[in-house]
Length: 93
Image (cartoon, rainbow, N blue to C red; front, side, top):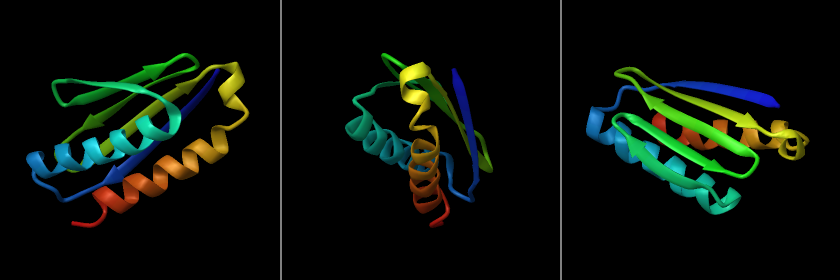
């Protein structure tokens, strides 16, 4: 298994951070076929071979992703794509 952790600082209000998190979720759900659900301020997502969460905090968003063996071959590409999307939506305050 491969673990990916991405932290993106932000200055968004809680409502705006949640909307930004939903944008990230919609993007990765569409690209990777993930099922997403909110659990308080944590957006959880999963599918076979991928499990993760996007945890919203007052000044940062933290994405943690665990990839199963078949998906681990794409870890670098997945990390780059998710980091880019998070920077775009959370960094554009």
